[in-house]
Structures are given as C-alpha cells and as structure tokens.
Image (cartoon, rainbow, N blue to C red; front, side, top):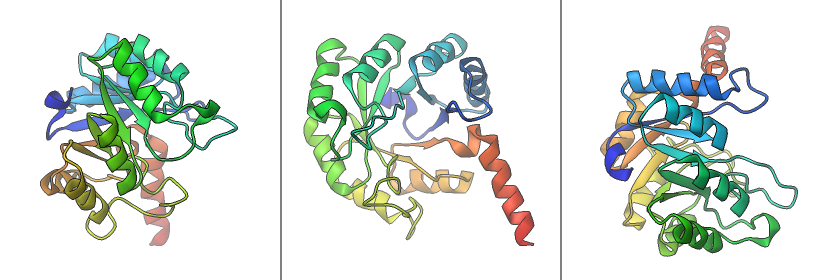
Length: 227
C-alpha cells in the first residue's frame, strides 16, 4: 500500500455513532466520491465500514477500530480484539495507536505487532504517534510507517496543531526516523496538503475537511460570525 499512496491523498472516511453520517453504506459512498476526486487510498474505522468500502472501490484501505476502554486512554486499535477484526476486514494496512501510553487489558504494542506479523505478515503497519519518542519506538518495533495522527490529541501534546511553526513537528519526525512518515491531523486545506508533501511526507491523510460536513460547515459559520 505504501507504494500506491506515495505523494498522494488518503481520504479518511469515518463517522462515529453520534455523527449524522454514521453508516457503512454512507462511508462506502464517501469513499467512492473520494476516489472520483483523486484519492489514492482510504482510511476507515470498523470492520463493517471497511468491508462496505472495499465492495465499492478498489483503493487500498488503512483500517482502524476506535473503541473506548475504561482502563486506558488508547482507543485506536487498542487490543487484539480490534486487530483481529481488522485482519478479517481485508484492509491492506492496519493503523494502531503507537503512543507510549498504557494499553487496555495490560496488552503491549509489541505484542500486537507480533500478533499481526504472525497471522498476516503481508498487512502493513502504520503507527499513529504523538511524539518523537513514539516514532522512534515504532520504528524499532518494525512498523512500516508512522503517522502524525495523534499529535495534539494526547495529554503531552494537547493544544498542538500539526501546522504550528510551519509544520515543525512533521519536520522533526522526518529528520528522526528512516521509515515513511504520513502527515495526518488538522490538514484542512489543499494548500496544507501540498505543503506537507513538499516538506517530505510520504503521503497525506485528510479526514474532517473531506468527510465531516458538520466540521466544514462550522468553519464557514464561524468565519461569518466573526464578520
């Protein structure tokens, strides 16, 4: 999948249960719209959505399962249960929260990596990271790529934005690891997408700016109110 998405756009087609577009059927159509717009890959949440999307388009899919656990803040592909669901979905790549935070049920990131490699070694692994330390650890564990997905969404990075200081965090990750780096998180304009690719990102993932109309609408209405 990494070869297919190089220097291209991966559209994140997700809608959580409390969002208006929550539906595997709708996400499959969203993926089709993204393909027609030129996307080279899809990032999707849940086994059901991924299966529906793969019936609609032939694009490779980065699969995740978002699930909350009471004993951990990790919620993106947190345990073997989520991993096994994704292995059954047919996705080409699995993304996992690769922060150094404690995982649910006492499981470790290394155990999940070994589990995937043992069951389906052809599936590529994306590490969703929030710090340079996360990225370094992910490379050591054998991830195929790292993504800046969680920068700004952990206690250590709360309030940070990927575009802060001319994408300084992305530049730091690129200088630190040798595996491909995917730019993801608060990439909300075509200009930003081009900029992260020019900086050296392997590809860019865009979510809310494409697939969450309530967020897009909110940006417009906020600007109107400011006037």
